[in-house]
Image 1: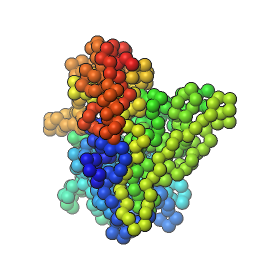
Image 2: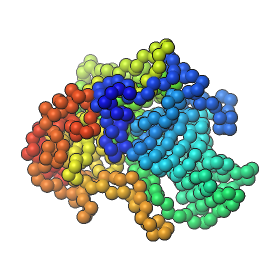
Image 3: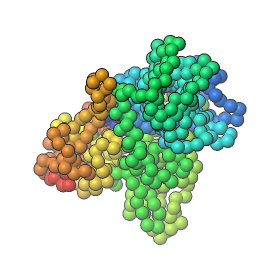
Length: 528
């Protein structure tokens, strides 16, 4: 590990369960015992003969680690065991995901989700593409609490394993599975699950609970409330609200659409066609300015974007700079899995009119680390070409939206309409929103208070927000500077010289030093 670098992978603020690393480039993980992308026998996972793989299967599928809160780790088969991880990290067959005091969400291609509550572990035993085109997934839940919400997609296979139980989850099913050394409880909120145990098959239907304890198996026509139900519901509501818009953008893959629709929007770029742009960006931002190289044995390095929406635009389509509009992404082309940088993309809509409208140009793509025979391979390497800018909560109960943060640091779904916020940031360089922290909570069966991860809400706990887009009315005269965050250009320059990713400095480039901001539309703005 590079001295003074902490474990990067915490490329966002604490609400994403990550801390930033003060480094512009360099190794941030250990060294994998690999040469030229081929791992040693000790590092490679032995195939599971009981994972349901079939002749003719392809095993190149990747699924997305879509949300990270708190402390968790991923074993990427590098030979280093469990390592810290970050949102948008690809998960491939044979990997293992473990939460400690954290929460995780994994998205599959059709937007089916798997969520892990704290102190849980899931092994991804099978991620296969059948010769028929169907996707087969088998996850072994080693311990803890997981939630699954499958989409309506027919023909795919989605299975769970817990000890001696093997469960086939039907489309449009919502379930909770809790398992430990002595007891497994399957609760089906919607849909149905076929359970095979000791050669016997049972079906657990909507609003039924199966409990397996020692040799006792019972099915009850009721559902109990459990600690993390409110967190699961909030996450499902988020996807239900944002996943349906612009469904054509995924080119057949729906994962990542929710975040694409929340953190940005498609605009009409005239003769260039429709392009997608993230909110909270300006002229100084570029799509490949910040990121991480993650090593995958047998495949080499994959580029991982730190942005909460950074999945589809880095595995499909093409980025270009559009004169008069700025950087934009257009869907299309072929799907890029782990090797998501080597491809040159495709000719975007409107490229044939470049002569009359202005010349398009692609971004400067980072170059992956070289694989040198006889040398160990760094597991993770920073790929920063510019200082990283983050939006974040200040110490005085305010949230500061920073220009060129592109949504980095902004919690998903809980701070209102980001389009309005982005418009304010474009005018003033930064915007401030009053916020308060709350955990999703409900009353358990025994009257105990149950909850999930802390989430930021707009406004104040004393009453509802005044403006649905921005939250409660603002105090006049606030700015990033007097909200507990340094906003001076000199401080930003200092952060840049220090490496551009400092979670402790509270400094972001692109903000203003003025403290004469005014309250506009519920957001205090710092004038340029």
